[in-house]
Image (cartoon, rainbow, N blue to C red):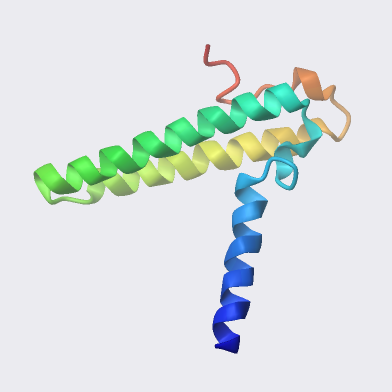
Length: 103
C-alpha cells in the first residue's frame, strides 16, 4: 500500500506540472493569456485523443494516432518553451506561442 501512495503522489505532482497553469511554465504569462493557451491546448489534446480512438475504431492502425500524439507533444513543448523564454528578458505579453495566434 505504501508503494501506491508514493505512486499516486508522483502522478499528482506530474499532472500539476502540466495541467496547473500556476505551476507550469505558463505561470509567467498574464492570467488571461494563460487561460486562453490552456484552453487551446485542452481542445487540441481532446481532438487528438478522439481522432486516435476513431482511427483505431475504423482502421485498426495506430500510425496516425502516434503521429497525432507526437505533434501534440511537440506543440505543447514549443508552447511551454516559448513561454519560459519570454520571462528571460522579453515582455511576457509579447510572447508568441504556436496556439496564441489562433483566433
